[in-house]
Image 1 (spheres, rainbow, N blue to C red):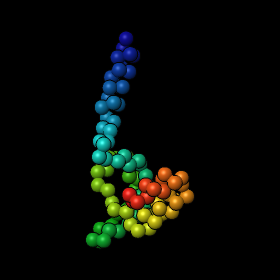
Image 2: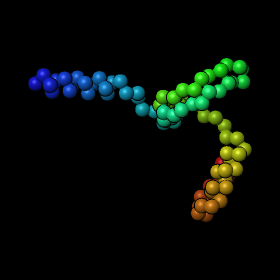
Image 3: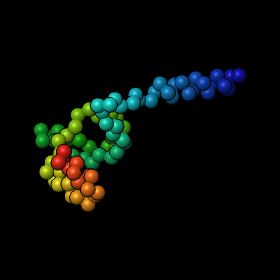
Image 4: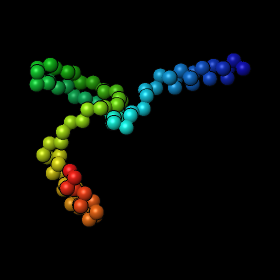
Length: 87
């Protein structure tokens, strides 16, 4: 009885400790390494591992990223190529 109560309590704490799921308007970002970098304002950041989190803000695509997507779409089926005008 004591052992089963222990597992129930252990499980309930682990469920409460897990982060909430991302909303429809958020994107899940997985854990990933970040190299040392310096921002435009001069703030320096050391190398670290970024934890998983939900992200709301989206960065705009640059021209190279747009061209890469269009190039990949051009090799796909006609249906996908017709969707490329949305990019």
